[in-house]
Length: 400
Image 1 (cartoon, rainbow, N blue to C red):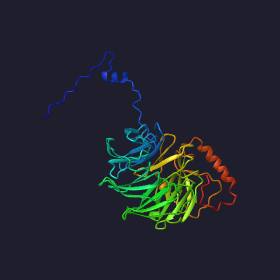
Image 2: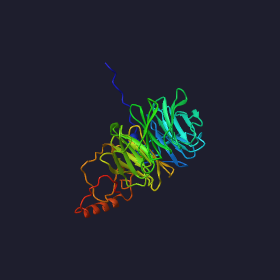
Image 3: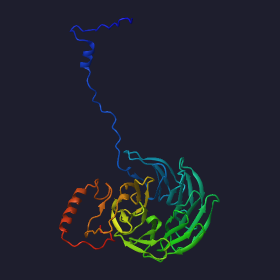
Image 4: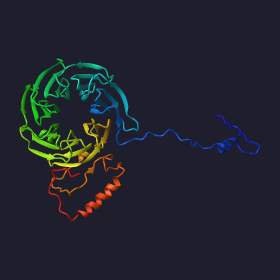
């Protein structure tokens, strides 16, 4: 049989109150606030630099972004939606002149950069150390860069020279000068066979990488061709121009345009596909527009660098963010996760002078715009006035 349990005597004060009760009565709650939870934003905060940024690139598998500026410096940041979560990982000042284009390798271990100083640099992403330098890679200043696969990459310069390099040999196996002016942008098809180039001479060039030969130049267009994107599951090619027009080519019909679309912007300086139907464009007016291809229509505004020409756009690996750099020395992030799901009605008609829709909270007229409510009221009033007016028959122009 277990021994009976003994209870400890309860100590009482002279007034007959037990110590436990007295302790509970004398203790006061602690109202001292604890550490504040870090605020989580829809997008990472802007990154500000000491010089204007020419080029930006997202890492293929990590939340890392690279930026190159006009002083030739290259910066690599980790980015986060947590308030003040962006962090500089390292920087490199190896280029003697402006860094004009940058790209991560497919495995994310190396960062390629090209510069006005005519050199190509390959940097180790983890430590920021220079792995390889190709000095005097071109006779003219380098302007554009495209990584083709783990071994091949292409570079274009200010004189119109295209070179395709093989890392295994350390030399270029293709050197072709078919453009009269600078090569502004490049793209390659899924089969890694056909390389497309746009140039300041107003033409698009077509090069067969497999057969190592030049195929053809398109007809001349008005103004510089500044950017190129392969759309519609490889069936269409879109080229932006300094005149604010998007030119469309059929695949294997590169000689002449199949369609053109005048966007009411000062220019289209850069372009990046969001999906097979929608591209985002950056212009000299500082506005980033989302544009649907066939039917050709400006869907709305994604964001802006007010009054500052946009140099380049980049899309994050998961497609959630679009980054932009401009002359305001900032890299900004925009939420584009919902843009890809927009479907444009072929038969929809728009009213005259209708303000473009804000497609992100930070765009003009979005939820974070101070004047958003006022603009919405004005837009509603305007729409009411136009209810009896005849609708516009034009669906192929921007009416912002």
